[in-house]
Length: 109
Image (cartoon, rainbow, N blue to C red; front, top):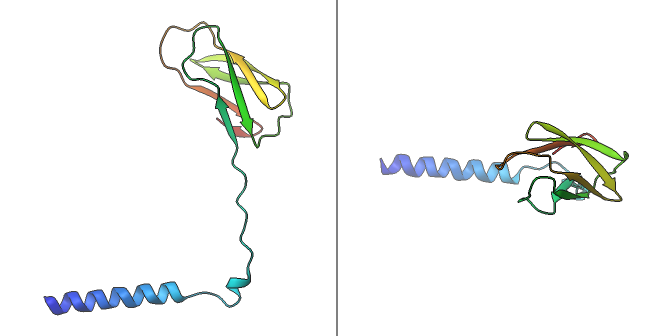
């Protein structure tokens, strides 16, 4: 049994070494690929009351429209654009937790 464990451990180590040492010629010469900037939409607060205005700050999103449409609690809300920020009014909803959803410039939030 001890011999089987030693053989298995040896095979695992050889496999790991073989995989880690494999690389294509010139691989070190390649420049790292820059990952695309992440987009975000961040609310200024999460605990809000009915008819309160929520401000959203966008990051790495090119806002091309003056308004967008979102939903909260099954109701549509108009999202207005103010430079790189957006804002909407909480509809008249019963107290509780609701999910806000929108699509802005092809990105779902």
